[in-house]
Length: 262
Image (cartoon, rainbow, N blue to C red; front, side, top):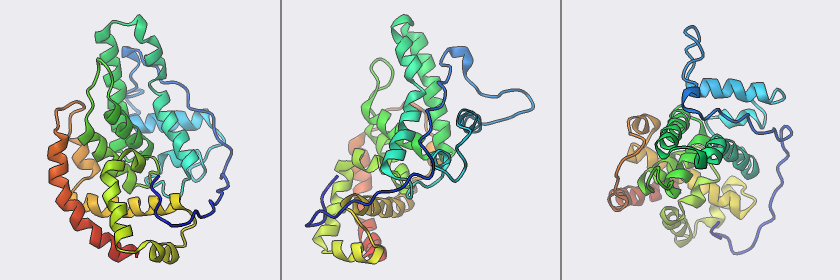
């Protein structure tokens, strides 16, 4: 994380609302097991199904507890460790498929991977922040023989996740976010922000700035879940064009952000 203060501030420890839950059961990744609808009367979305299975597997979790926060629309009050656990739940959806890859024909693996990627995308467009985090990660990483790296899509999902309180995505978008932190430093606004918002650590400061910036930037850029829902899973998008088109928006968002938080 970038250091914005001159001295290291003590980290505050956050008590867990409930004990950490075991990961949800692995999703069946065979081509025929895609859980679109459970029956003709149910009409559940993918996120409804996964939410149901999550609470079935974690009976001690509740909507307001640590486990239930997996489905919150804003994770700004959820600490880094829990958010990382949620990311691993999303990553775990792909585990058994990746294990079975050597036994599968490439075409079958690709089809099954796209099914899971579509599931993760549906969760994200329904407002599941850990799914947005995961999509930021996977589009930045790419998958051999399946999907190329798409930095534009990674940044779009990462900025949406950051605006929803993600503490994971800002670090993945370090190149894009560094000018934001430099702007705060260059305008001597660090101490003012710390005092005004009672910020206790460098990590909290960085996350608060990223959260504040992403909300203003996304509104100006008209970057929202509805826009992302219309995109195909795989597309050829130029990152250089993305940077060119968003640099002006970022410059416009910075003084607005500072006005509100400093």
